[in-house]
Amino acid sequence: MSERLFTPRALITTLLLVLLAALPLIAQAVGDRYILSVGTRIVIWAIAAVSLNMILGYGGLVSFGHAAFIGIGGYAVGILSANGIQSGWVQWPAALMAATVWAALVAALSLRTRGVYFIMITLAFAQLVYYLGSGLAAYGGDDGLNIGRSRFTGLIDLRDKASFHWLCFALLCAALWFCGRFSRSPFGHVLRGARSNEGRMAALGFPVFRYRLVACLIAGAFGGLAGVLLANEGAYISPAMMSWVKSGDLIVMVVLGGIGVRFGPLYGALAFFVLEESLKPGLDLLHKGWGEYWQIVFGPLLVIIALHAKGGIASLLGFRHD
Amino acid sequence: MTELLVADRLIKRFGGLLATDNVSIDVRHGEIHALIGPNGAGKTTLVSQLTGSLAPDSGTIRFLGRDITRLPVHARARLGLARSFQITSVLRDFSAIENVALAQQAHHGHSFRFLADVRKDTARTEAARRGLAAVGLEARATVPASALSHGEQRQLEIAMALGGAPKLLLLDEPMAGMGPEESQRMIGLLHGLKQRCGMLLIEHDMEAVFALADRITVLVYGRAIFTGTPDEIRRHPEVRQAYLGEEAA
Ligand SMILES: Nc1ncnc2c1ncn2[C@@H]1O[C@H](COP(=O)(O)OP(=O)(O)OP(=O)(O)O)[C@@H](O)[C@H]1O
Ligand SMILES: [Mg+2]
Image 1 (cartoon, each protein chain N blue to C red):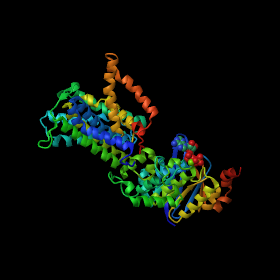
Image 2: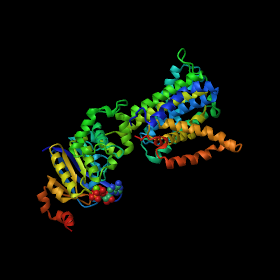
Image 3: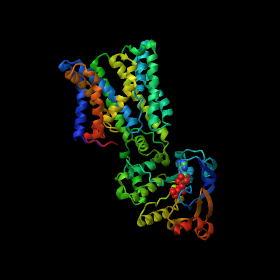
Image 4: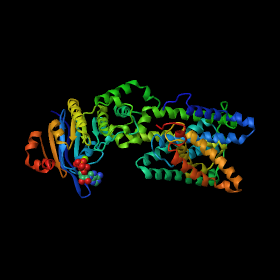
C-alpha cells in the first residue's frame, strides 16, 4: 500500500492525526477537559486495535481475547503500584513482559486449533484472566482499585493530562509506524500468505505456527502497552477493562475501521467512541433514559456498515487492504 | 543413478478403506517417475504422505538418505521436496510475482525480519521475475493470482514449486483442466526441468506420461501393481486391463 502525500485519504489521515495531536490545545481553548479525556482514551484503544489488527487483519487470526492483554498490562502496573513500586522504568517493562508471556501461552495452545475453536479458546483464556482479576480481593476485586500513576521522575509527569495525551499519541504513531513496516516486511508477507493459504505456505517451507506465534507475541506486547496506558489514564484498574465485551469492542473497531489496513484501527476506534459518545446523549435527548440502550442502535448500524462497506471505513476512503 | 526418495512399505487406512496398501516406490535423480492409476486409486494420498501432510500408519520414507517419515511438511519442503497440488493452490490475494517471491523467500534463511521493505529488495524482485519467466508468465507478473486463468495458475504453481530449487518435484496432475496447447507447453516445461530435479508425476493424460516418463508405477486400489519403463507398461497384460483398457473405452 503506497501512500502519496496528497491523495484524499492521506489528507484525511493526516488531518485526523494533527487533530489528535492538537487535542490538548483545543481542549484548553474551548475549556472542555472531557474531550481531552475521551481523546486520550481513543488514542489508547486505537493502540490496542492496531495490535489486534496485526493478528486479526494481517494474520487472519480471530482472537476474541485481546482485552486480556490490556488487563494484564493494566494490572501489572496496578499491582506493582499498590505494592509501593511506582517507577515506570520497572512497571512498564514488567507489564509488557507479563502480557508477552501470556500471549506466548495462549498462542502456543490456541494456534493448534482453527476457526471457531480458535475464537473460543482465546475467549476462554481471556475469561480466565478476567475472573482472576475479579478474585484479587487485595486489589479491589470486582470494584477495581485506584492506583498512583507511573513515575518517570524528571522525564515526564503522567498526571499532567496534556503530557500524558502526547505520550499516548507518540506511542500510537510508533505503533502505526511499526505496523506499516511490519506489513511490508518479509515477516508480514509470511503472515499474510498464511492467512491466504496456510497449507500452501507450509508446502513452500514456512513453519507457519512459529510465524503466527511470534505475531501473537508482538500483538500481545502492544496490547499490554495499551493496558499500561489505560491504567495510567484513569489512575484506576478494574476487571471491566478486560471483560469479553472489551475484546468484542476491539474486534468491532478493527472491522469497522478496515481489517488489514494500517490506519483502519485508528478510524475504527475514533468512529466507535464518537458513535458511543453521541448516541448516548442523542438518545437521551429523544427520551430520557434511552441513552443507556445506545447499543441497540449501534448494533444494527454495525450490521449496515458490514453489509455495505466490506472493507470498513478505510475502504470508503479508498484504501486497499493488504 | 542415485535414489532421491525411497518410500518403503507405506500403509495408510481411512477407516475401513486401505488407501495405501504396502506401497514401495522410489524416485531417482534426473528421472521422471510417473504414477498412474484410476480415480480413487490412492495417488494423491501417497503424495500427501511423501510431503508430510498425511502421516502413514506404517512404513518409512527416506529422502536424500535421511529418514523423513516424522518430519513436518515445512521441514521436508526446506530439504528440497516441492509439491504442486491437484486442486490448484496458490496465494490468491497476492500477485503472480509475489507468489514466486514468497516461494523463494521460504528458502532464504528465516523470515523473522520485521522492518525490511520487500518492495525495495530489488534482488528479491529480480529473482522472482526470473522464476516467472521460466514458466512463461513474466507478462502477468503484477496480476493477482486469483485473476489468472486456470492454466496460468497451474504454471504459477510450477514456478512456486521451483522457487526453492527443489531436488524433487511431486506433481499432482499438473495438466488437469488444461487445453491441448497449454498441455504441450507444460510437457515441454517439465521435460526441460529433468536436468534440475527428479519428478514424481501423477497424470491421467497417457500421451503426456509416455512422452515424459522414464519409469511408470501403476497404482490400483492402493496397491502398486507394477513398475517399469513405458515399453514394459504398454506390454503388461494386467496393466492394460486395469488401466489402459479403461483409457481406451
Ligand atoms: N482424508 C480422507 N479421508 C477419508 N478417505 C479419503 C481421504 N482422502 C482420500 N480418501 C479416499 O482414499 C481413496 C484414494 O483417494 P486419492 O485422492 O488418493 O485418489 P487419487 O488416486 O488421487 O484419485 P484421483 O485420480 O481422483 O485424484 C479414495 O477412495 C478417497 O475417497
Ligand atoms: Mg488425486
